[in-house]
Structure formats: C-alpha cells, structure tokens
Image 1 (tube, rainbow, N blue to C red):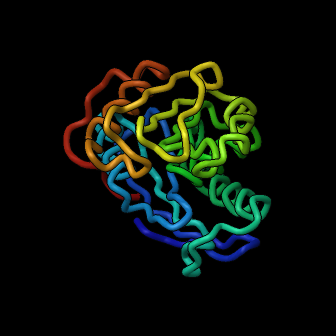
Image 2 (image 1 turned 90 degrees about the horizontal axis):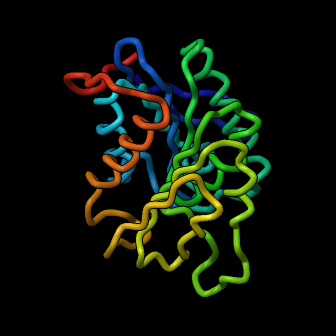
Amino acid sequence: MRYEVETPHGPARVELDVVPDPGLLLVLTHGSAGSVEAVDLLAVRSAVCRRGVAVARVTQPFRLAGRRAPGSAVKQDEAWLVVLETLVKRFPGVPLVQGGRSNGARVACRTARAAGAEAVVALAFPLHPPGRPERSRAGELRDAGADVLVVNGDRDPFGVPDEADVSRLVVLPQEGHDLKRAPALVGEVVAGWLGERFKLLRPVEGACGER
C-alpha cells in the first residue's frame, strides 16, 4: 500500500508491506538525494520479510517536494516522528525498529529514543563529511538509546564508525557509500542481526504483502 501522511513540514509517503503476524515493524528511509528504491533498502526489505518482519519505506517530505537537501534536522525529525506515530498505531504491540541509509540513518539514530524504537539499522552511516574527519557525527550513534547495527563499506568517503560506538559494526569489503556491489549481502546481514536480536526464527514463504 502506498499512501501519504501529513506532517507539520509537508506530506510524507509510506510504502507498506506486511507479512502475517509480523514479529517486528521495520521502518526505513532514504539518503539526502536518494529514494526508497535504493538497492540496499530493497534488499533489506526482501530479506527481512522472509523473517516475518513488516516493512515500511518512507519518502520524507523534503524529497517528496523534490528537494535534494534535507534542510533543518529539527524539522526532518519532527516529520519523521509523526509518520512513525501513524505506523505504530497500525501495528499495536509489535516492536519497532527504524533505520535508513546515509542521512536517513542519522534521522533514525536521532529519533530512536523519542520513537521508542528497540533497535536502529544504519546503512552507510555518514560518520563525517568527505575529507572532514574532525566533524564526526559519532555522537548520534552513541545517543540513539537503542541497539544500533551499522553496515558500511570499507571505501566509503564518509568514513566508517568505530566499533565501540555501536552494538554491531559490519564493514563490507570493496563497497562504497552506495552499498550497491552486493546488496543481497547487506540484506542478509540486517536480517541475520534482527533474527538474533529479536529471535525471529520462522521463515515466511513468498514476498511481502500489502496493508
């Protein structure tokens, strides 16, 4: 199902896929200039569905409006929390995990505590602007208030977080910031971690459904 959610900073778009009796709700979002069709996000969606996880991919208001820069972090986070509130109401009692790639991973870390998320999936977390390691964003990882899985490439010009700042760090060889060389591996890493963390043991046949 694809639908829009009104936020204080413009509409967001949700693309929602579910499985019967989901064990988790995973909400994912894109990078600054990207979309929810990024290959790593799609690979995660496919892999976790087979573990019995419902997946929502969210296009944030700034991208829906055609902008390539997210603008104010405060406004971005406010809009994100409104979308999450509507999703959580659809899945009462289902644990929430949120995440995204690049800038979307930052949003997920910054808002995890307020959203009550039990874990964060951070793909290609941009530790610092390229060439500016002194401008570290590691504090967003440390302050998430939940377990954080980071999946980064060893050739990412935005840097790779320190293992001490996250619950689990997976660094994929030969991968850059887009994580597009082996997206299926990204999906399996995420599905495996969520399976261990939340004891998701049952396989689910077929693709995600809609709701």
